[in-house]
Image (cartoon, rainbow, N blue to C red; front, side, top):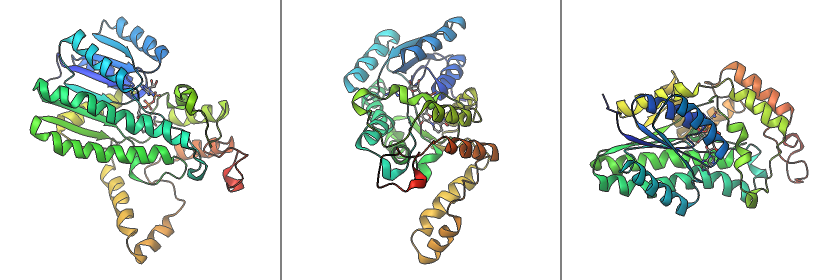
Length: 320
Ligand code: NAI
């Protein structure tokens, strides 16, 4: 059994969704928890919860794409708790939906910037400090099942998550000699606030090719509400650390999900395989429950995952 008591856990995106779920579970296991988040309102709500529990939780307002601020946050952790974290849980992430061919530079700069750039910043900031402290540790990054396959309406997101899975596997190998474990957590749908991600999109990166409205956000919220509970997320992550897992898929059919993903890559290499893949085109992922598929169909009706109507190179069926 891993002893979490008294360990310092630094959780990005720790004030909402998966990060907040992990903060609860790791705090209840005796960790001193730092929640770092770009939204002050999320931090305030989360701290209200933790104060009511008399939990040892320290909030830091942080944009993980801001390297200077990240270093300052790491210094703050050492000032407050006298040590770098032994546990780094990277949950902060964003998404927006629309056809890949509608994506702008700004769609990529924002989403890849947070989902991959922010993780790179976390690793570069904390890994040397964790190694120097000499106490080993654990690093977990929330990737996504979206990183295991193509994302025709989530191009920046899916490529960032695929990169993060590779990055975690790379650090898993590199950090083993230091006693630091590394895991990529790859969930499907989770019941979080990610439908509000656009609220954190910086002013200078507002130009998007995707159609978004209050209705599309609400439709996406309904879909998310069918997803995995955030406390269960925290429990899964803790179990993954205890078991020393590298790629953790919290679904019962996890091996089948990975088999389908790797078979696709194998199929892409031969004409016979291409025929097999063509026969599967358009089918929703086998692991997606029917009610989630129905929620996506409803969301599409209000323009979710469609392009802005003025993009004249986009197929009309893909425009709002
Ligand atoms: P959430 O929106 O509830 O929580 C994410 C938190 O990250 C928010 O509090 C937000 O303010 C914060 N954040 C966003 N940009 C930030 C930045 N630049 N710096 C610091 N904090 C920032 O969403 P959720 O779903 O809990 O997201 C957590 C992770 O789970 C993300 O990496 C997401 O991609 C991933 N994920 C989510 C799925 C879902 O269905 N909700 C499915 C698979 C993966």
